[in-house]
Image: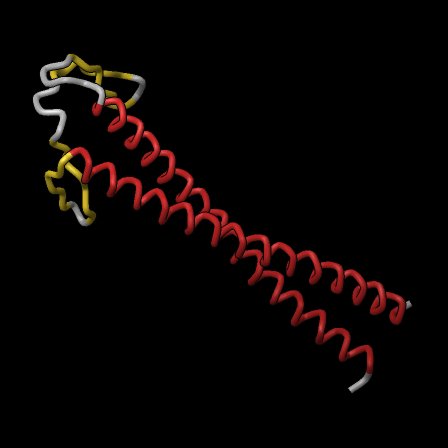
Length: 146
């Protein structure tokens, strides 16, 4: 095998690896976006629970229903919160327990976000070094063709 054909083979392998790494980076970016959306949602839920904690029974409140729209309600029992567990299952919890569940989820999501960001940084570094190697090989192969 000649030096040129071995360089061309390395170029092909690098090209495949770069495509794989770019797909991985895209998937990680999507994951980071999803985690950020969930973090925003849970942060909002936590702030709402903090606000409810300050209210008394029968306090009038505006509850967001989406699309910058609200409905006015009376708070029947500020210590009862319905918390989603997943798979369409929800349970009634005390306000304190609900806040603890939300806090735990926020902590888990923060860890997940940090992990995904670290993985993304590592993949981006590999992409950058691979591109540098590809450019070097391309230049060498082109010089050999001239």
